[in-house]
Amino acid sequence: MRKNIVAGNWKMNTTVPEGVKLAEDVNAAVNAAGELKCDVVVGVPFTHLTAVKAVLDGGKVGLAAENCAAKASGAYTGEVSAAMVASTGAQYVILGHSERREYFCESNEMLKEKVDLALANGLKVIFCCGESLELREAGNYADFIAAEISESLFHLTAEQWANIVIAYEPIWAIGTGKTATSDQAQEVHAMIRKLIAGKYGEKLADDTTILYGGSCKPSNAPELFAKPDIDGGLIGGASLKAADFMGIVTAF
Ligand code: 13P
Image 1 (cartoon, rainbow, N blue to C red):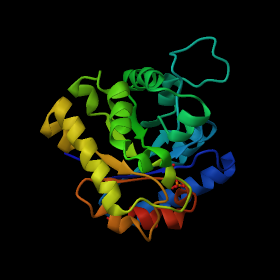
Image 2 (image 1 turned 90 degrees about the vertical axis):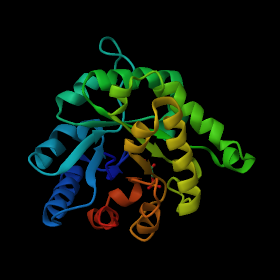
Image 3 (image 1 turned 180 degrees about the vertical axis):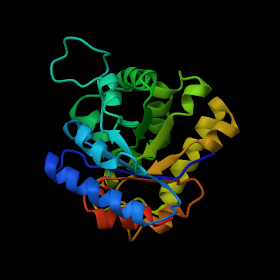
Image 4 (image 1 turned 45 degrees about the horizontal axis):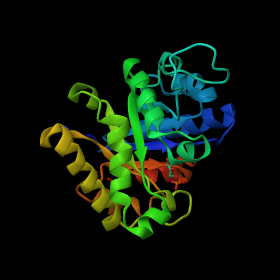
């Protein structure tokens, strides 16, 4: 069955004490909210994983890293492996964020390696895709997104696919305050689901969670989440304030 998920991506924000405080606030709010219509996940910097896990332990909030290495282990100074991430108790890793693709030269091929290592270590992958403004305006964003997904994920078995969550994040909507309209997002989400159905069949496509990310906030989340193929959000800026994040969590 398809799950609704609202996941925060804190990016490179908060010190460890600030992050622990934010996690405490989110955890308390989620526990106080009673029955929610979505799973809640916080994506935090590597340095925060263990401390945040201690705050979330026993609670309902899942934990994600924002990246992992494309190598299993060894002489890669400064890198953090999927096994290291899993050993903190995190259940998820965000891979392929456009900021990593752009600033750290992550290719579809490299992301394929990361995905394999994440899955081999028992992590679920929140796999990001999405087009630039140039591609959107040129009108050929569908092919670009299809290549991002197929080149990094379509080697997986159907069984492995059960641990993949897709996040559609149009680059032009990230941190710009310019949200995709719910119709624009729905169009791409439906296209992604059709692409998955073509490869893995209708049932698996229907069971796949597809999140929207890009200037999602409490005021626009209800309209986005009401669309049939939008199963939640990957939230940047608005995940840094517990009240705003909860405003999105409760939008379902
Ligand atoms: P904003 O919500 O700040 O636009 O960021 C979205 C994002 O990049 C989540 O991964």
